[in-house]
Amino acid sequence: MKFLSTLSVFAAPIAALHASARSPTNATEPIITTKVTPSYWRATFANPPFNIEDNAWFASFFALVNKITHDPDVKVVVFDSSAPDFFMAHFDIINPVKQEYLDTYWGNITLLANSPVLTIAAVQGIARGGGAELVAALDVQFASKEKAKFGQIEVGFGQLPGGGGMSLLPRLVGRSRALEIILGSEDFDADTAAEYGWINRAIPDAEFEEFVDSYARRVSSFDKVALSEAKRIVNKRSSYPTAEEQKEDWNAFLGTLRQPHVQARTGKAIELGLQKDLDFELNIDQEMMKLVGKGPWNV
Image (cartoon, rainbow, N blue to C red):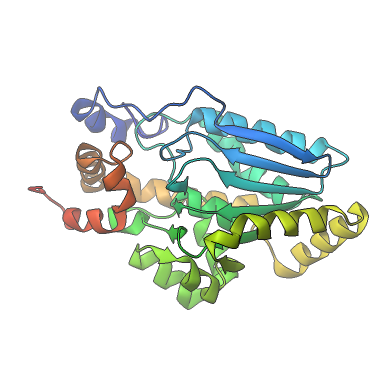
């Protein structure tokens, strides 16, 4: 098994330890698109239990971005999850992600951000790592007070947020809070995330679906020209990160990942349950504390 096809130096020791491990799979498409109306779509992440960003997810996401950016009628897309505990956990740690997908991801993210369509993250579970970065990359973020958690956990494993988080978070929450989030590698509840500006609102779970649906229907009833022009000018004034800036995040992530003790730590985390065990994934910001230092780790 491997982490990334681009990192054979990292993959080899992981493969030796965990040759039988595989990511959770699901018979359905990893992203299910529902056209509620021609102007209002739902994109549901449907690869439980963790909604890992794996090869199938990348292919499905790119196809969805293509549909969104070429459909003349769609105005709003709500991204949600069918998994009970997770909005999206993180990139696939175990199986290799195709290089072509990694090369294409940043262009697709910025294309979606600059499209005339409003994208909404409707988070009723955990969003960490690449999942939290995807939430930050979307236009508007709503979260369940009781169920949502957000975390950039990479530094706790000796890595860096590589999915755009280091470019996105300072713009959303400011320099000091971005450093708190990234360097602390802890989970944040929805209320704190909203207070910081990481998300728009924390909403009681009992009211969540009605609120999100009502907002999406309201916006989708308005003229597309007005919506798209408003988004274009706000993007220009707020300096959304470029694909090149986000690639710089990724390259910095790769640099940290090449360290031998980081490779060993990630291998040990997989052994303990990373991407395989629900309890480990639910409590990953605490589980990582068993793996501080350069090892060996007797856990």
